[in-house]
Image (cartoon, rainbow, N blue to C red; front, side, top):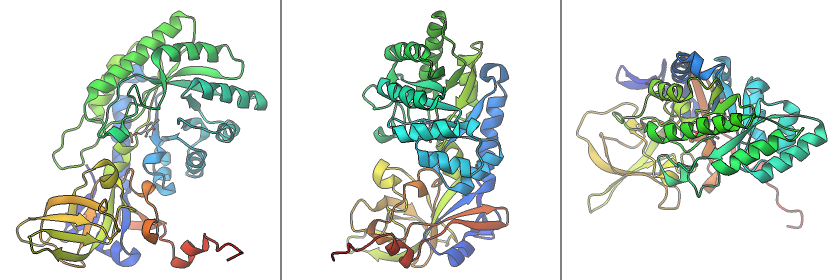
Length: 424
Ligand SMILES: *Cc1c(COP(=O)(O)O)cnc(C)c1O
């Protein structure tokens, strides 16, 4: 459910007409809904809270990489949400947005020594170690600082899942995590070190997962491993279940609900007496954001093909080009008339800059506004200035109020970041 709805024939973000944002901020622009973010978080929080014995003092840590805007993070932080981070920059963002260090998890395949040192200085809740080599480096960094961080070992369960090969992370050949048998040995090795404190296991098998079966299989593997480790007198107090739950991008699409997901996880974890952590990204943010864009022109070919050319492009929203992702496209002020098939494209000089082919759209004219739905996750965070297009701005709406939470850079600001070498 989201709070982007037609009111008086015009699409609004909560109480704010999108046409007003287009006029005042310009297009393209991302627009986020506070009420939708809040609703998605509270639905998951309540689903988790329904199973207190299974999940202990559970943590929900938003995967910052899905949407790292400071105001989005601050909105979630105020609700009590933690942060799952994959870089020093993301840790800095989470802290600036008000997430306490004790609710920050540091994940990722390639953390540098400098990043590990930063995480220790800050005192994050937990560092998820993804390889034996990383454990060695963390031990060295921690020893140098006299710190003893809580760590989890990220397991590669050889169960990949997700909406596209590029967002599957738990498969055998994927770069993430440690295979189960190696992970057991690594856990024991960590426990023998005075410089790290292994507290648990983690997994994250992929993204846009719409079926619970692969997630359940991965969680069962973690619980089996927990029992094995405990039988070796090793303490395991936390299980980090990762993120990955999918969202309906198309109206009517069926995805497992947060309640079903939590109930499944509770069945698997019940009796184990661990604290669970959940790392949703897409689930909280995707349908809390739209990309608002204007039609530059309609190009009709003699063969009947119609191109709707927008002022947004793959540099603003790369998911269709990168993951063949589907986003619903809706007019802000729908005109009456029959739908017709269109190719929806941006102005960038490559064919990959195509948002959709043969998409049925209601009548559109030049200057009309449209939105891409479900653009709140992996949208603005992946934007760039390719083709020297100014970085797309972001707006947060809350009821009737709104704020520009990332401004569009001016031409001068964009060019001032570069220098002409002094010999030129
Ligand atoms: C990307 C990521 C997530 C979030 O994935 P979603 O599919 O957006 O829920 C969670 N945990 C880790 C370790 C990740 O890399």
